[in-house]
View (cartoon, rainbow, N blue to C red):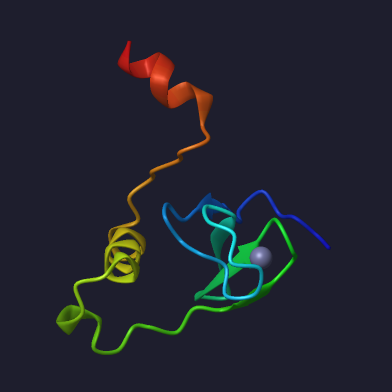
Length: 86
Ligand SMILES: [Zn+2]
């Protein structure tokens, strides 16, 4: 696998892997203008396709999709976040 610096991966808070059912193991990243999710626990990965009818669904997935659209940089694992606030 090749990791490019331009590809940022972020954990999806509260997301459950459809394969191994582990919570908070899914990361999402953007590639070729498409959103993918990847499980760090079992290696599961697929394309995230929920851009349709998401406004009618009040789910965690909807929240994640909106964060991507706004390109909000919420890096949960970034140690600089906590240090900047303090
Ligand atoms: Zn998994």
